[in-house]
Structure formats: structure tokens, C-alpha cells
Image 1 (tube, rainbow, N blue to C red):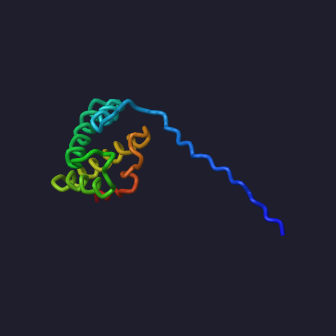
Image 2: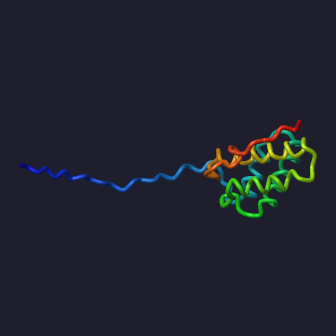
Image 3: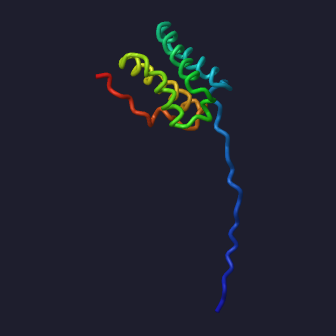
Length: 120
């Protein structure tokens, strides 16, 4: 009986870095980039205020935050405001998280799995 030895050549997997889509190196930098991408001065003011409030409520680097951390921060942004304002805050934060994910700043878009409650 002939035995056949197959030599399996393995090569290390090459991991290529994704090209950078932003120069932002901090949560504040990417927040500024997001706000500056908005065309309306009114939107820039309101979205910037919501983004800053979210980062403050989060209390940690976004790259270290889990879905649960984001959910807790959003709860803090919505408890003392009307349902309509709370919904706007959640939608703005989801937009921020999507922007950061599209640019490659975040590996995971926590906002994509969070539901927005109806204001009705």
C-alpha cells in the first residue's frame, strides 16, 4: 500500500489596513467632521449640541463602547425631555454613529441595532 504524503503549504494571512477616510484621531475630531459635513447652520448647531451631550453621557471613548454603553447614554439623553426631542436626539446619535462607521473610525455601528421608539 502506497502512502501519499501531501505537503500543505501554509502562508500567513496578509491583513491589509483599510485606507483612512478621515484624519480624525479622537471622538471630538470625528464629531467635528460630522458637524462640518452638514449644510444647514441650524443643523450644525443642534446636531453638534446633541453629539457633545452624547459623548458626555457616554463617558468613555466611543471605540471602547458597547451597544449597552450606547443605549445607556441614549437613555440619559432622553429621560428629561419630551418624546419628540428624545426621538430627535436618538436619530442624531444614530446618524453620528453611522458616519463614524462609514469612515472606518468605528468597527461596529451600535446605532444600527438600536430601535427608535415612536413619538406617538
